[in-house]
Amino acid sequence: MDIQRIESYMKRVEQSETETFQPVGNKFKVGLDLGTAYIVIVVLDEENNPIACEKQAHNFLKDGVVVDYSGTLRVVKELKKKLEDRISEKTGREVELIDCAIAMPAGTESSVKTHQYVAEGAGFEVVAVLDEPSAANAVYQISDGVIVDIGGGTTGLAILKDGKVVDIQDEPTGGTHLSLVLAGNYHISFDEAEVIKQDYSKHREILPILKPVVEKMASIIKKYVNLSETDTIYLCGGTCCLTGMEKIIEKETGIKTVKPENPFLVTPTGIAMNC
Ligand code: ATP
Image (cartoon, rainbow, N blue to C red; front, side, top):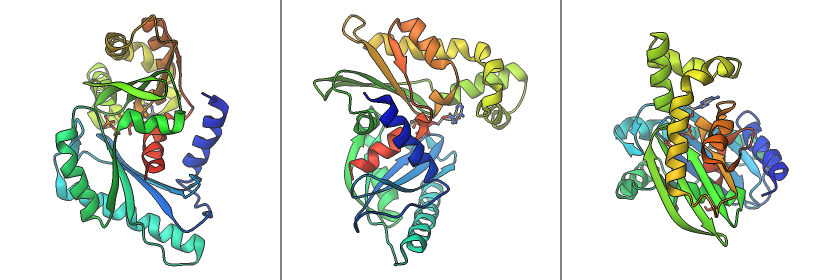
């Protein structure tokens, strides 16, 4: 993996949250990520250049399952409209985003229809359905190793051999659990804990409090990874934004652990690449 290539590519995706880029060609590739904590839509052009991206925090999904259909649908419609307006303004032509790809956390395949109905209800046509860690590998392009996607609700793994996913696992324990621990420790609400957790200047102070949960995530990774055969763990997912958590995972597993600076947009971008 060329970490520098990925860093600069992902920086451009992050920039596309606030800046709309001029596309190459007429086709748009859309990745819709219905996550536990965020709904994210990434738009790429036909050469996979980042064009625009929108995200919205919500609580309409639990462990990858939609628990509030109309709330989810409303947010997806709003994000789609925002993106279409931004891209139309940038290109000077009326743009409608139609084709999209979606992804499911491993073990939630039975909910795929609901995710599809949300996408279709918002005016998309679903052209590809992926699993989340495999989507991340569209960005990482690893041939051997393990991708670990730590999101709001779960820690998911994809084990890769010769460029193919040979095993996928997903277990509860994600960013939500970190926030619950912080809330308990500081006697504050969950929402207040989320704000502290997402503040990079607080990460040094809160890491020791969160260490046992990160160790639990490491133990999930350890359970499924062949320690003698795996030389690198590639992290992605919003929870991996927590500064220093990669060091705890590296120490606990004994495997070199890397992450880009902005790991939260890797999976939605990989989803879009597969559109
Ligand atoms: P899942 O993959 O479990 O369905 P998701 O797709 O919503 O969930 P992500 O968007 O990858 O997950 O990550 C969301 C999590 O990342 C939330 O728990 C959020 O609090 C956490 N997070 C976001 N930004 C930061 C940050 N700067 N520092 C620490 N955690 C963060």
